[in-house]
Length: 165
Image (tube, rainbow, N blue to C red; front, side, top):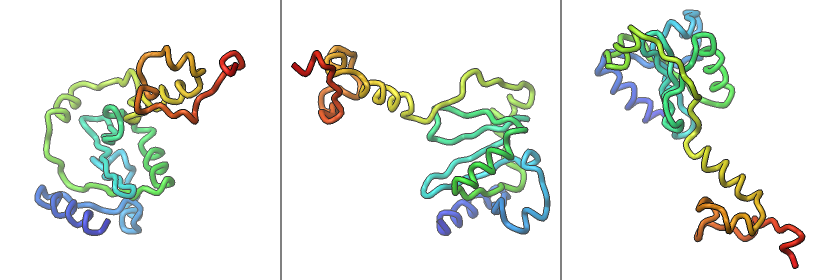
C-alpha cells in the first residue's frame, strides 16, 4: 500500500492537496468533525474509493456500487467508523479541491436519493440465490439467468418428490 499511497500523495500534491491518515494522532488532536472536511479516500486491500462532499452533501463514490450513494451529515462519522471497524484505512484530503460541475450544481440545489444504490452484481447474485431455490423443472422453464447453459450447477438442483420418480 505504501507505494500506491505515495503515488496518490504525489498526484494530489500537484493540486496542492495533502493526504493525512484519518486515525493518526496528529489528525485526531485537531478534533475536526468529519463533516467539515471535503473528501476522504478509503482503502481495503487493493480497492480504493472516495467519499466526497459535493455542494453541501456527502457521497460515497465507491465503484462497486451501481451509483453514488448519498450520505447524510449525521451518518458520515458513523459510516467512516464502520469502515474503520471493517479494516479500511481512511485518509483525509486536506486543501482546496478543484471545482467540478457536480459541485457547482449541488451548491445551488440539494438532491434526495429515492433508492439506495446496490453493490454491482447484487441483483444478479439474488437472482442466482432465488434460482437455486427453485425446483429443477421450474428452473428449466424460467427465463435465462445464472442457470443458463454453461452456468448451471447440477449439484444445486433441488428435486420435489414428484420429480424424483
